[in-house]
Length: 197
Image (cartoon, rainbow, N blue to C red; front, side, top):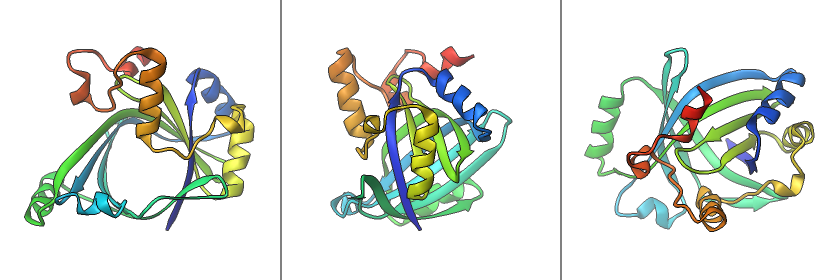
């Protein structure tokens, strides 16, 4: 399956949520989303591939674990595109043992609070990182992405195909503060999403 997406910095997530609600968007998920990327002696990174384990912990107490492989990134017609194959698993402990037995080790962690909405056949995900800008990802078919972008009211030129590292870099230059995309990087500080409560 091809993943097609754009990301933008969101100055006021409440405005975006209000626009989504007004457009009849359906909430698909609210809660913590923890990504762990795995590699073996950088062999996947060398091919611009990703092996990711993602854990969703919903505000309703639900837990869902997904494993994904992503192929190399391309940019076509202004969209970030990757081949992606994903499946669900039960039991994180067994999965960790399988990964270790195959020689894969965690190499990168990303922790965030997210709210996912379905609108115009696209998925809009608001992402609060431990310490960084709030980002908005819009994913789906090209036409659906453009419909969602139009109703969200954020200028089209504000959307990027950049990797998360580029958003981190721009945040650090603009604020003079070190970003934290995982709880481990945050140290004793409180994550940004705690202000939502």
